[in-house]
Length: 231
Image 1 (cartoon, rainbow, N blue to C red):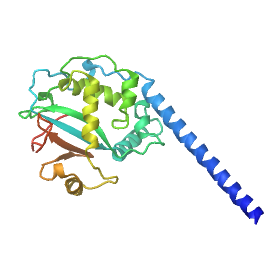
Image 2 (spheres, rainbow, N blue to C red):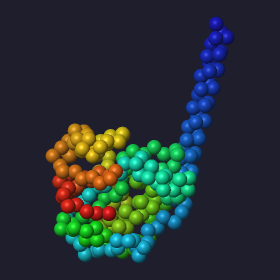
Image 3 (cartoon, helix red, strand yellow):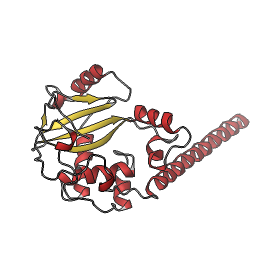
Image 4 (cartoon, rainbow, N blue to C red):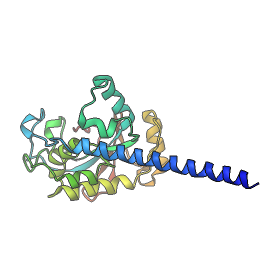
């Protein structure tokens, strides 16, 4: 009887040690991935942006843009193969399992018919954000380049500082229930409205593997204009 107990105890000890080892490996990989994504030049240069600046356009509403990460990462792997850029490692590396993430929060003009007619780069070309700030918001927007670029292009048209912009994104994101599997556009709209009462009567938008939720200037959900454009 004692021998059986000893064998059972040994089994649990070994299993526990293996669990600790697996946890250590996973978190070390996570830490390494964070290091890769922030230990590079993630600054966004306005003069290199293909769309450019528009600091004179009026802001009439906001659009929260969500992206289905598995589809995005699949496209990147097809494009780059085993040469995935450092800027994509944290989001699309082998240890990552993101679902719906935030692409950005955009300041929009209701009269705009082209991307260039929306507010963009309202504070000009801004300096690189601190690494500590970038790391804090990687769970919602898992790329340093994405965080930096969205702040300069869009966030600076809404808030005076990046922290307020990212906090608003996090708060909006966390109010939403999101599916953890891929759906067709119509199925996605139905799921979102069934599981998020605030969206029940709202007209949502979508393009490719992205979902658009629109807010008025008081941050209340509104119908997304059918002619909505943005980038």
